[in-house]
Every structure is written in structure tokens, then in C-alpha cells.
Image (tube, rainbow, N blue to C red):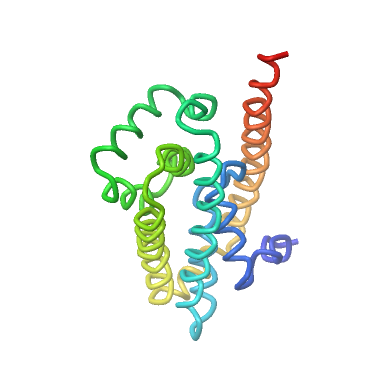
Length: 201
């Protein structure tokens, strides 16, 4: 069975929104997953190629809103349970000194930049919501829109690569990594949320 059949759930217009949302949350782990999906859908659809970056951006903003809300709820002190101390201090400095500029780079940079910890930090530090989400949405659209435009220009070549057997085998490997990474992230999140209760027992 080909990857297209196995992942048919996501290879739709609403799949782009859903994967975009999952990609911006703390639990899901699939590097370049949403990027690959936008490229594939845009290359496949000559008429509505422009729609997929919009949907991926909307989904990404939705997922980021959940992550931001969690950061806002746990506060700055609670961040230490989710973000390593050295990385937290670096994020805190960037947010306080650079503000929207730092957020813009965070939203447009691909992995391995840790996007969700950065969004979590912005929520905990109560960065202005309108500035945050406006900048975040604009930069995500720049990223996904650029990918869709390139896919539209080089559509046939892109499809040949994506639909080749070696690429599909690689995708299966990424899916396995995603499942393992998501399980690890979920376990770490669960343990982190349990820590305060255990400490007061």
C-alpha cells in the first residue's frame, strides 16, 4: 500500500489545516511534516495551490494559540518543567529585547529550531497577543506560501520525487519517528504536569 493510501486522511484541504495545528502543539513531533504536505498538495493541485498555505497557516495559528495559552497558564516559573534552563534563558532574552522581530524569525525558521518551546515562552511572558499572532501568522504564511509557489512551478518534478518508492520509504521512516517522538513528548508533558501534585503529597 502506497503512502498516499495510508495517509489519505491528511491529503485533503482540511488535512493541511489539521496537520498545521498539530505541528504547532507541544505533543506532536514530525519535522518538516506540514512543509512536505503543503508542497505535495500544491504540486498536485494547479488550480487551488494557493489555498493550502492559507489553511496550513490557519492551522498553525490554532495550534500555536493552544501552546500560547498553556504557557500563559503555567507562568514563567512553570516553564522550567517544559523548557531546559539554558534554552529558556535564551528565549527570555530574545523575547524581552527583540519582541516581534524574534517572533518573526521563530515562525519562519524550519526545524531544528524549537518552535513550540518558544511559543510557550511567549505565552508565559505574556507577550502581546495581537502582535504575537499577527507576526506569527504573517511569517508562517511567508514560509508555506513560498513552498507552495515553488511546488507550483516545479510541480511535475516534485510529484515524481514524492511518489517514488525511495521517498515513500523515507516517509514511512519519518512516520515511525513521529510516533516515537510524540509518545516521548506526551510522556514528558504528563510527568511535568504531575510533578506539582507529587511534590505536595
